[in-house]
Image: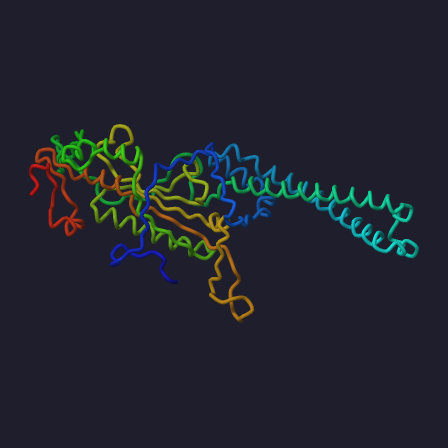
Amino acid sequence: MQRLIKRLHCPSPKLATRPATHRSYTSSAPAAKRPSNGPKPALDIKHIRQNPELYETTCRERLYESQAGNPAKIIALSEQLVQLQHSGRGLRERANLLRRVLANPATLTDDSTLGDLKALSREELRADARRVKEELAGIVRAEADARREVEALALALPNLTSDETPRGAEPRLLRHVGRRPEFDEEGRSSGSGAARIWRSHAHIGAELGLLDFAAAAQSSGWGWYYLVEMLAWTRADPAQAREVFEEMLDVQTEMLESLGLHARVLEMPTADLGASAARKVDMEAWFPSRQEHSDGWGEVSSASICTDYQTRRLQTRARPGGRASGSGGGDDVEFPWTLNGTALAVPRVLAALLEVGWDERARTVAIPECLRPWMDGLDKIGPPTNRN
């Protein structure tokens, strides 16, 4: 299988960089309006109708309480659609008979299927045709409204949750990355085990002249940061998706290890999943300044499997065999699965590097060895007066 993600040691990894705000997954947030010229979603409404309890449970587990009733509403609307379609068929049949009679009145004498139409005058036939036309137009509008409502209700549902995802609000610890740094009482890295750390990245960055929060807030607003992201797609195959997902996690782990950061890898619970993710794994680096309120941990990267949730909404199809049907041996078209991962939340990683590499006595920050070739060989950063 062709690799979709470049390894960290490749000379030119294809990673996307974009600005982003802090992500919030509250179900009460208004849904973004789809553009009128956007692709029409290809949602699996049949699967929702056949598994309403599964979708309702998914909504409740993922705190989408207001959407938990959507499957039942979809079933009710689908039943209304069947009734409308049945009524529409009857009206179309009568409209066809009326057209025949009005076009050729002679058929009244020898057609036994015309029923009550034989007793109507030409004016009555025309009036009945107008009535049928108006009723049929109303049914067509009602069908369109019902279909739009079904689609809107289905679009609001979150993805189905993977078996690996913990139910509830507590993540499951998968493993740790790197070794936790230790500091002496003056805030220098050491093996003493003492933990009196009071310097945050904000203090360190300001003291070294590296960070200007006031100017940043004025130019871009609070809460903005840059993400280096990985994107991939696979066949609709859980085993293949898992293989690519593990490769994304390997890339993230390799980056954190190379930077000398201590981190933990968490399987995130249902309460923390966004709508598109079936599974999500976060990596949280250890920040000395956060020990009192979050045990020192802060998210720096994540990765998600989104199955066909996004491709169905974008009408993105693939023919894995690469040949059109009918050409001999070609595979059927399918909705591929998508995966995404934050390789690095750059400012958060920089914040962790400032805190972990800080030497309180020397007033310097150690530069990770893997970054030194891009820092003109410097092994530490000091105050502006100490720089040449």
